[in-house]
Image (tube, rainbow, N blue to C red):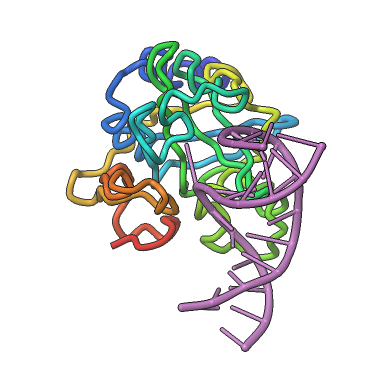
Length: 208
DNA sequence: GAGATGATTAGCT
DNA sequence: GCTAATCATCTCC
């Protein structure tokens, strides 16, 4: 069965429990992110990520150990989704990492779509295919049908998961750069916690 | 309970 | 390049 095959290449929970969230962010480049909603599979491979390094990272919602109703998801065991609303308009999808009690997460900023493109175009209300379909974190979540209803769900289930299909990029085409949209974070805004595939058309903002 | 704000995007100049 | 859209969440009173 196809389900059995998919099960074999899903990333195991142990992958997400690693304490080096920056290294994990880099290794997620080229992994496949999928959702399956109402029997319709959609997804593609990840081309842009950002790491949020827990209580010592001023750009993180959990900076200063702020465990609130919203951020408590990040304090749970790695391998689940953290979805929240930004600017009252956009939902953002993150992957929670590290063992329980350590609030680290990885924001998925862009993917290159490979499956269910027509369904994604409908969700984005697009007539023709454009790279903006999954460029930027708000766009990725919308195209894949990810909403706050999926906050804290497991990535081992059949709604939302990540696969390793053996796709890799050489080091020289993966760039490390400062994160986007976190100017309020002082010196931490300069940390090279953003990773992306150089020149990929789905990567947001500067991508050289 | 009120006031400020944001891990953004799309559309217009 | 600039800005409106739009509301859950957090911070103080």
